[in-house]
Length: 547
Ligand code: AMP
Image 1: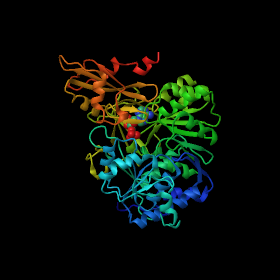
Image 2: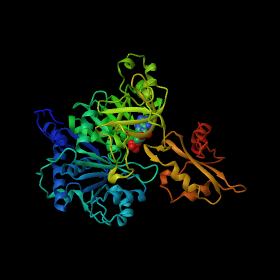
Image 3: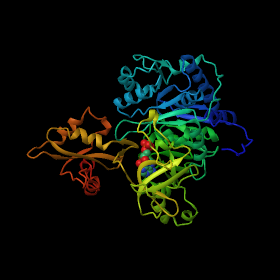
Image 4: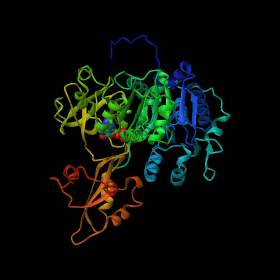
């Protein structure tokens, strides 16, 4: 714009390599602890990770990886995965995190869509890799995140340790525009195919600064952080960046997230902060109850991904003196959207009166804006009662999907429709009341109700099929399949589940089948609200059998 005077401050592109540079330079000996996929707990430091990530960068460059190329990881949280992130992003390539829990067909679709050139995979994902590799022609090389002694010998690929061993630890990182793509993560795709969210260096860097606000993660160099949230789902809530950014000790669970394994790390590593989906903490609380163990070091836990039940908030507070912070976000937001750190008004209330606020999904930090609208885009009041479409904008919110999938995703004011239905109250607390698509959240991962319905409805004896997520003590929610048979037809539960077998991922399999009429709403769509109300408090067969 004519007449504007440029500032005279340094151009210092906001690229994420600077984050690990900082961690290694100013906190070189700070530990990074992983439960390795091989089994033992392994210790390293930010200094060593920095050096090894640079070696990886050189191995990638020697292979011919260039800026913009996609390098995929299929891995749980370990120090090697952190090295992979920085080693890939540092040279301007794009780190594409693949979720090992996805169905093989989805992985094949995503890898081909992204045109990944190299796949860095955990050895525990060997059977997945074996199943998909033949269908992924863009992958030129598999690198097993292990040493020679542990890599699967019957599959193609080189061991990571061998691959980086002879490389130099000198490599120029960064020095490209901050809007360069850094990471790629596909949404779980409840309707249609998964869509790619393409993070930039700038969006990740600013997301890190935003997350470090006291009213978000509030981490410090004195914290020991157990990062349970997976690096393959929604950026591990940014913790793989915020850890080295402040020099916090980072602790990672590998692929062991049961109560006993988590407790062991909390104790031996004196963890002060942790972050995970409700299921993980539910399993931990059950384990604590069984063993009588205490949590002397843990101060706060960030819980999100699905709504945090009141019982978790209360038990952590009342029995273990641990503060629960409820967090909401999504892949398209890098992922942090809101956090429930009590504001002054709420903090002044007696604890019981704080609970309704703590159950809400929290307030926006600087860097996120939110609005509520009706279906026509008209703004709704922030009165805590009117609910509407939740739309967001910010420096770390997607403006389009990779390769333009889904077309235009922002409204005229630049806001992205989250697909969540929510309220906002006078204090700025947002509460999710529904998902506009009725996705089922099982152990922090999504199950598409519609996909199962469509397959079940293909059974020759079935007239209508509906799938709803109902509460489950271990997994948060599990799918219940409701079928309305064609007149004069009958079937057994086993027959219907057998029909689904092989057509959906095993963990998508409904836990039970109910033979019932399937109610339709005014527009001919299945009325899930009605079904949920009817089946509220449903007792799963295991619970009935246990009595
Ligand atoms: P994803 O992109 O897979 O991380 O999923 C994002 C979606 O998960 C959001 O749009 C919400 O529907 C849901 N979600 C995330 N956090 C919460 C929360 N704290 N409470 C309720 N739903 C949540």
